[in-house]
Length: 315
Length: 176
Image (cartoon, rainbow over all chains, first blue to last red; front, side, top):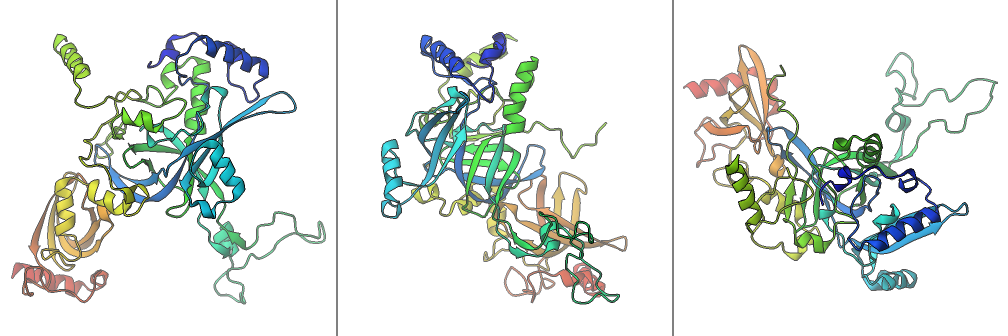
């Protein structure tokens, strides 16, 4: 099971992952899949689904050398798959996605439209529904409950959430303007923007001129955060570093596009099989880490410390 | 070589703990005995639960006794502590200026005057490098009521940075 893709030969270009997959290529992979009934395995060209979690707070942990690092605690709240989306675009290419929902909500506060959607999926009504683009082999059966075991300690993730709202803010905070002097004749404009343009040419303010306004509360992606610990009993994912949003905010967590997905595809294409996954990782749960899978695995898994000790001088 | 082979066979045959196929070098800490109560799964009291679960037993004891808010043996700011660490400086003695209570991230600031230079050190209580904390003198010069010492009128004694005379009075009380 481990690293079988390293022993196989490189896939022909027709079966490599491309942004636009044609229906003929999909039929070819479907036929190949029907021949073998083995469960799908992660390949360097696959893109898995992500999860929806809640940011619960931050704490600190110490690695094996005794160096302190901050961690954010993310908790899955009954994260379930509600749909598998396959759309054929007008030019024939296909878009595949897995729709995931999390955080149960009371039926009486859910609209009839959404109640029907959740009934079709066979899941209780949820507060947040999001979809994650995937490759065709990474579809997950509808109704599957996803678990924190989906992420492997040692891998990297991207975390997406709405940033903390800062309200109406001035240019100094919002755009890091320097403001004006504190004295020497400056009158009532110490934190103002100053000039906003040129003179008669162009004789107007360019669109996009940085000005005061509402700051924060926008969708932000923090990339390449290392997963340091996974607790499937409490459905916790500990990621190193900070994550946008307030505590108890809904966040989307997916495999890092740069350090996982793109690096895997790139290194596989180049033949550098040792660099496909980050150090220490052999494979990833595919198509997703589910509650059933978590029952057969240890409840708490932590990442080892791979770096050298920062307390010892470099030679 | 054959002994290692035997060890690997024995580990694969044993049913003590489930193995983790996705990473060979992953660390598997011992699992908690009881399953988590339902409110924790909704996030209620989760961070407090982690504050009680993540540190090791002796670090948790330190946090719950010396650096708690109400324990009879808690260390008050104004006490003189001597800490032993695994990294340089291996020994540091100083006046406790502040206790920053954040669960496992609790830290203390110790101030001393070394070679006529004021030196402060922030020590994280749960750090693996922290070997030992000795209480040299309880707050208030050791003449306070009970074992904790005399309570200073401030929780954070940062004013000591600007008054060397108060610092020397604490050190004089120490030697006396």
